[in-house]
Length: 98
Image (cartoon, rainbow, N blue to C red):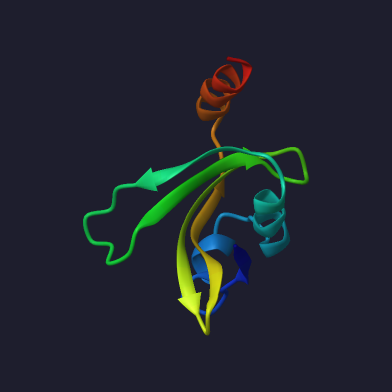
């Protein structure tokens, strides 16, 4: 069970640089997410996941995140977030319809 989010100066600036707000990222995880699957990152020390879905402003979001266990709670730690490009949106909208 997910208990919340972990935000700090290590991950927030990476997400903010693409103009996505914390509220949009957190709302994405409270809504229907089209895809969540492990993503490969050779340098990563922990397993990373990709979440794709439509945020509260009806814009498609692409979020890389990991899960952290802190004080017995599981937290989502967003690593990077951005709005999706038109071709990516078209691809996932086709997937959504199947």
